[in-house]
Length: 129
Image (cartoon, rainbow, N blue to C red; front, side, top):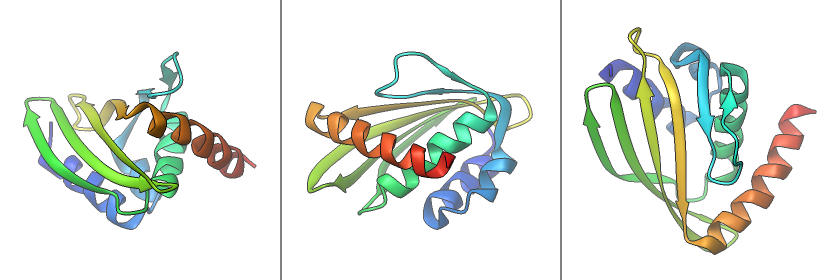
């Protein structure tokens, strides 16, 4: 893991500037969603999902814990979506070039997952149009 890439990730979270993702997401990145059962393959789809998530999760989104080890980082976040408290983790793996090659999101509680599923579907349609 490179601290530089993780630092750029935090800049993306703060700014929601999708151009940052172009720098830090590997083209062969795999995105693992809390609501889509199949891995999403490729940098483009990963950037789309992460951009959409920053729009949907923006209300109070912040990290409360960060654990890093070697080529991995686990970042615990909280936010509010439609009045529901959301708690989750981003599990990030970095390749040898320091780019993000796997991004896994896990969310709780179940009510929050259901709301996120609906809101992310709407946002991905907007971003894909």
